[in-house]
Length: 513
Ligand code: BG6
Image (tube, rainbow, N blue to C red; front, top):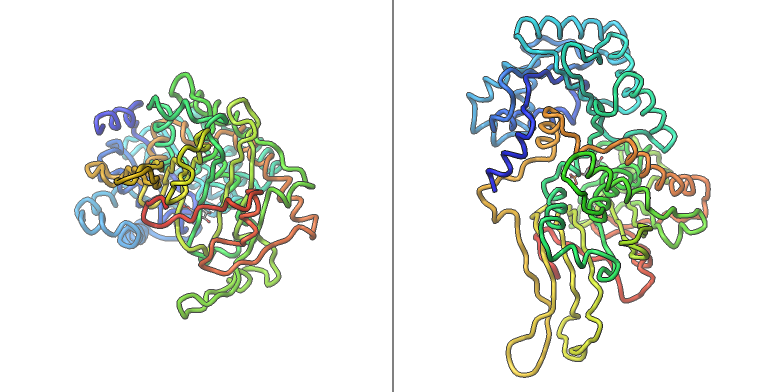
């Protein structure tokens, strides 16, 4: 298994290269990017000649930058940094810094000179990744400045850009941003990151489906009753009120992460396992999403917002009391929706997607509910209702479980629901790598399989845009308030259109009751 993994990772060689992080003093860079690069370094996956240039608006020396990187490591990669002090020291020698104010054209001239200088003195080819870890409104500004200085040209080495989500703010703005980036970068140079696709367990959905003979035959409208996708979070907006209030759960989670997960669950098997074939299949799913008309919003979408609540004798702020949130904000912190994939495989199978903040658990999972056996022989003898589910747990306690009915030992035929569960943690020898490690390494190698392609991003905006627009223009569409530490507004259960059905309440520990 380990062998196969290594071979996959090393499909293309990791060439010597330079990584420039715009926004290197920001939260994402400190929390996720630098720890991921350090881990790749510890795993000996970085090329021999590799440097990271932090580019931030602050003026600071290389020395101070290295102190800042050390602090970030000790905070966000604590365990590995403390366990490998020598490695941390040698890693720091690969880190550099250049002050770049993203809106100052001349600063890009200085960046170019610095790159030229480092490339010459350290003998590193100008294979460069530019990571846009900056507010979205700056993406086109930075791209334009790179283009003006010829920092996008590939005569002296390849150039790639990694663009964080959200890619655009709507269908129109996504197209506009794409056009601007494409004025200086080809599609194969643009890596639109969606960290959900980098999660080991999301990739495992493809392996579960396509490397086994027994899942795929039932993975269709004939056997599947409905699919539930949940991404719940225990935290609120955690100091990101300014960003979140202009985004909301639909733009923050559904348009990207959860529609991508849906695409992986619903896609057809590609004929070969390469970037284009996989992405060709997943985009077809997104293009097949049945549009939700403005007159059908109430039957298919429920939005909610958390309110001030006493939880374990502590007052949890309501969303409107969060810093940088408008006191009368109508931004949704919870969304549940019913979606249909209009194609041959999934005709009329509902996909229920739900995400929210301030819910009881931080859990992401996909549940495939299978149709009941056609003839209920043991109907009167079920102790628990016999249901068949396949649960793909993305996090935490990642794994796969299958739920089914079994005879309770003893006289008669009493049936009870049991489950067979596989926990990733049982593969003790294989550490599950962080999404950013995998995705950064893929970009370094030039493998864009797990990055979103422009047509997929556009297709998902095309689906969510009318809903967001209806919310904005029609004040009759309710915004339901829910208490913190609950599973969101109870109205979300009405989406099932059947009083017997409700959302599964997942627990932190992976179990399937
Ligand atoms: C981010 C969102 O993309 O994903 C956050 O902006 C959210 O609001 C986060 O908290 C969830 O990611 P994960 O990996 O913790 O499920």
